[in-house]
Length: 242
Image 1 (cartoon, one colour):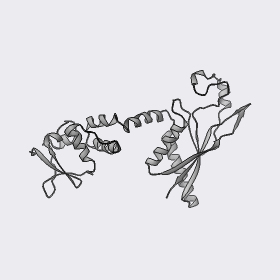
Image 2 (cartoon, rainbow, N blue to C red):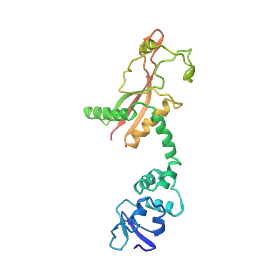
Image 3 (cartoon, rainbow, N blue to C red):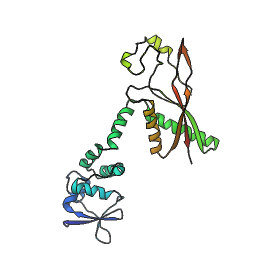
Image 4 (cartoon, rainbow, N blue to C red):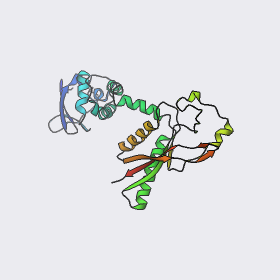
């Protein structure tokens, strides 16, 4: 039997709320915990103890009380807490606002990218290996990012794939080669361009605590056939480890 007003201790942070607030949505962890079917330990002051960091628990309570959403800069963190407490309505609301809504669009684009996550790991591993071998603070590597699989002639429109001429299989093979780089990203079919993918790469590396700078250092000048050259852009990535 729980009191109408429930004192809580969430990871050392104290909160007070109504029992009806905790039971607002039936299919949540909090509703199950305070349903009377489970034992909940209390602290020395009699507060019901939840062994979880309470930094963002106030935002959870505010949503249960009035449907209030957290400020944008707290959305990602509160989303993780909503996942932990299985608060479906809050998850649905947060997925429909920035930055999570934008992240869904970004992931839809990255879903078109073959081996994107594998290539990210390769960047990290190569940079780490080179830094350790050279006992250096940073490491540099070359990365090719290209949207078009084959070079485009002046007679083919670079912006609309539907207007490009079709090449035979034998002609296509003449253009197959691997640029002399450490990692290659591409090709893909979407409106998003090379700079959008570069932004994704840098963002995902930064989210893992990796300091990265990049700059374009030219294009691949590999001669393919006749007047065709590769011309894929080459970027130098600098990974700083400390």
